[in-house]
Image (cartoon, rainbow, N blue to C red; front, side):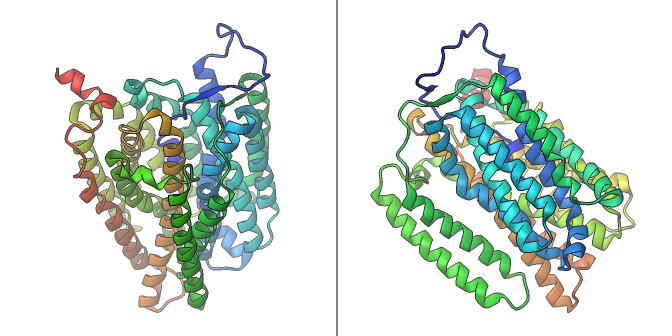
Length: 492
């Protein structure tokens, strides 16, 4: 589910140095760049596999908890909500307390949340445990930023992003078939217990090879901003998610109202503070603003697709979890295939043209998913998903790169926190949108269990949202990101 991590690790904050009092390290003996990248990718692998395995297991977990399968969207939303809330704060924690300390703590929290997920006996308990997992996941992201990309030259950013995430792509490829096997032949709880050995290995490797780095001048804490933004995001997301449940509309509207009020108070707070936890003034930068808006619309569709597809294959097609998991790896394979081609495509056609065509192609591919029927050949379904994953992953790589084209170095840390928060927020909203669209189809058809026509409607609704990003993609300058892609130098 957390596809944004694999589709573009964020650029680093500048102004990072070794922790005061830490022993000096001989740069000649420092671990190779690629080794550090692989260590960071171990954490990303754990997150990615956990998320993709969970999506495959949703129908089985719903039966054990005695709730409709669509209610499990809350467990997905809780994780992504925790990411959206804690990513801005975690960057400041990494600067203040050091990357090694916070990264090890993040892995420990994630593993602890995984253990609790495996022990869950009810949906509310699972939601709490998934939120705790998300807190750990949120703290892993700034470390990848600080350790991996703080020294990458601007002209190398596209290649760096494409190379660094390849190990993390293994998780989404292995996740669905492993999840399907576990659910079909074992107990779904083993999905979460798999994180224990990976997490322990990660803690050991971080201890041995990651340096303790922190900001030279850590940014002041913003507790008021943290509380207001967290309250706003939490109430809005769970309010939207609850609109898809019968009999809970009054509570959903109340949560949405509280979220809007808290959001208004945060806007007022942010205007009065020089260093708010989410710096809204960054939206005045053209390339950043367009990337946030267009990328947000696209991520809504990306958030909904991994929720809708396994449900459709298992509830609509009658597939086992194992068979469903085998098919859904196609998107991850397409994403992996794209990584080596992204720099060439952007260099040849530029960001603007590539994002317009790629965005329409990705939306069309996900719309076709809604037309899948049991009579379709398996190879055709697999090919469609692979092409869709290729195009969508390309969009995220482009968005995550062009966003920082005009950001000055002194604002890079604030920009990455802001952007990462919106990444996870929109993925969360995508799950809510998918669940709501599916619920609308069920109400219109007057049946309690989703049918294939309901999934078709849901896919068409969410893909219409990502297709609307074309409006914003067209507003990029024709030469936007030329320095990043190398297009200007090639033409000269």
